[in-house]
Image (cartoon, rainbow, N blue to C red; front, side, top):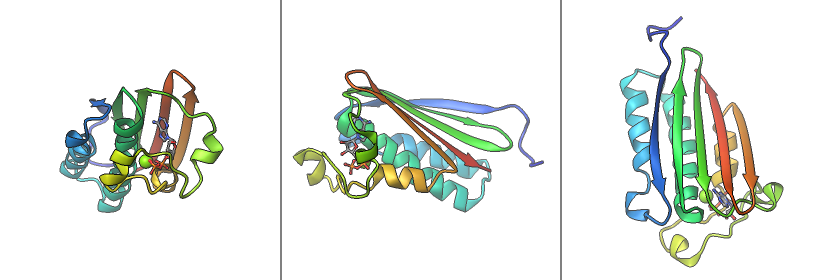
Length: 144
Ligand SMILES: Nc1ncnc2c1ncn2[C@@H]1O[C@H](COP(=O)(O)OP(=O)(O)O)[C@@H](O)[C@H]1O
Ligand SMILES: [Mg+2]
């Protein structure tokens, strides 16, 4: 049992598609929060990578979305839900190096096609659901 309270801690950030000047704000705020809570640096590092990649994807591909987090004594659960085009072929999208990032995103240094693989790699449980024409939801759990 950790020194944290038994009361789950949760919060959310709104994400706006195309707002690349705000890119990284949500994941940076969450990183700060986790660090302040005294979570292990390795946990914070994995959570930061995973949430940053998910946040950037919403900004590049979707119209808008939410990043929500839930922290209990045992787990950090992060859900990123967007209203966007959805993903037609999830298996393909999950492949390292696959990217449909537009030119403006590539100019920002994004579009290496490593976002989804890195989200999976840095979480203990990873789930992606997508409906074409509606949006995408990524759920990641990191064991604390
Ligand atoms: N939230 C999303 N909505 C729609 N398409 C997405 C979303 N996230 C990822 N994709 C699709 O999956 C591909 C791979 O994503 P990712 O691994 O993050 O690489 P990258 O963003 O560098 O292209 C993207 O190029 C895009 O086609
Ligand atoms: Mg990406």
